[in-house]
Amino acid sequence: GQNIDQPTEMTATEGAIVQINCTYQTSGFNGLFWYQQHAGEAPTFLSYNVLDGLEEKGRFSSFLSRSKGYSYLLLKELQMKDSASYLCAVRKYNTDKLIFGTGTRLQVFP
Amino acid sequence: NAGVMQNPRHLVRRRGQEARLRCSPMKGHSHVYWYRQLPEEGLKFMVYLQKENIIDESGMPKERFSAEFPKEGPSILRIQQVVRGDSAAYFCASSPLGQGSRGTEAFFGQGTRLTVV
Image (cartoon, rainbow over all chains, first blue to last red; front, side, top):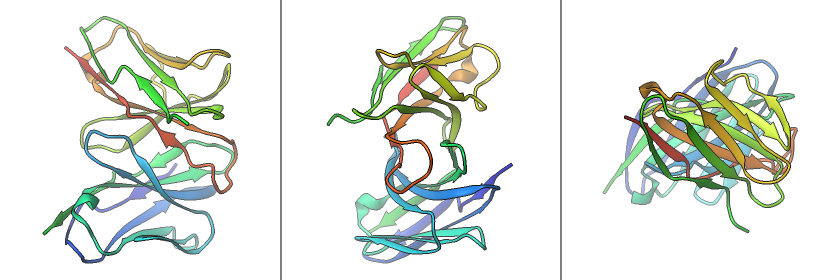
């Protein structure tokens, strides 16, 4: 089976940096995705890691350690519009379905 | 290039009726996935389809639920004899390629919010 854990909620201040962690247990790992989802809207793709290390894309970065079953999403220079749920999802080898965690609801305060 | 299109956006059905949810993938995408999201919960995989084929339906309830992706036209998720517990947001996603390689992320539609009264 697979198990994906993320904190349920986080809060941060506008302009700050926040790190959202995700741990997973799965066999046949083939990539980890981060999606952003605003309330009532579709999830939108943020990042993809399949090899260990850091992927940077503007204000967002994502890190993966396959040996530790661990990833984090780093958001810099937080803006109010970053208030949303952040979903960690794992893809298994030889399948294309994504297994999602329950998501982390981030609230950014002024 | 239009994104993944789902309709209707909102659907209300009485218990016992049928619900039909439609999904048109992005142009050039031949892989379609359906997910269900209950309030305050994560996305749960239901079924993965390619044109005219069901590849993985391990997340589909055994009864009342079915999905298809015909050669022509949108993918359809059908729920027969709906019950209150079927009330959820149903998201469709599409991707251009099969096995994992960079750039094969799935793009999601806006979802259909089904309410069973």
